[in-house]
Image 1 (cartoon, rainbow, N blue to C red):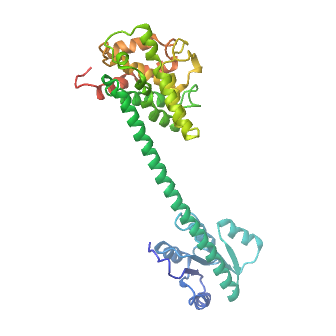
Image 2 (cartoon, one colour; image 1 turned 90 degrees about the vertical axis):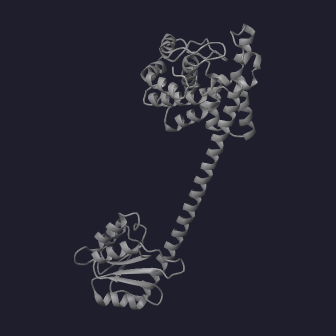
Image 3 (cartoon, rainbow, N blue to C red; image 1 turned 135 degrees about the vertical axis):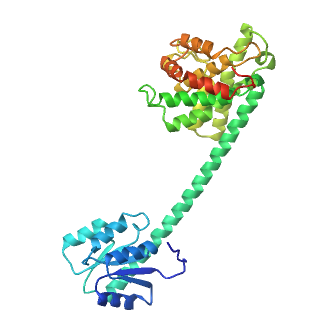
Length: 369
């Protein structure tokens, strides 16, 4: 396809099987526009394919492809469907005009052609097309700018999440790649359950993407826990455990303050708050910080609970060695209906081998499980 400079005159393609009509149109329009001619539909389509014109004057009654067929082909192709088509015809019946407009023509001029009417119609439709083209180009530019800005915002968001999560991780450096693993685990579980009747209202591609991005923030509240408790190489005393439990509310408060400063509700931050605050809640209501039970626990937090517990059990901690995959699976199965949503446990069991594979791929040390 050739590209015309914006300052060049518009190109008109006249299509008619009558040499006299083509000569008349060429003589009338040549001083104002670039004029191309075709004496049949097939030739017209070849010219359009090589270089789309700005407007087409199209005879209806032609041997071979008639005007209706040519118009239908033009309107079926993305590259040519916006070219204005003005039908030229000796027909004057209303049903013929209706058919032409239904095919996508912008106007209908009956023969014999009136030079003044032809000039006026051509000028009008070229002006309309120029306006439409301008708006289309403007919209495309704006869409590109919006897409660019959206990409930048998402990149900033991702970097911010990664930075904040990494800072939290440095307070508990023995968790190694815990953040990365749990992010993958929750994504696997969500995709497994998105077709389930219980979860399909919440889990879709958009919400799963939010879960994936939010997951690294689940333990950001640990930045508020003293080292003497967070890094204690042994079991916590009851009062120490109460302090440790506050990391969920500390994380929630931090995100809430950020959202308040922003001054609007953001779906990503809503998901992050749910995960941060409620991933230690238990299905039977014995978890913390709010003692939520069953479906009162946000789905995002229930998924995070499974991912977090699995990874915590198979990973080494300052106060104990990590368990084997098999032992971890048994513990999770034992918590079905008490610690965990039963359906999420069932999904985990189907994905257990994949969980183990992720744990081996993103191991904290060079040692294999």
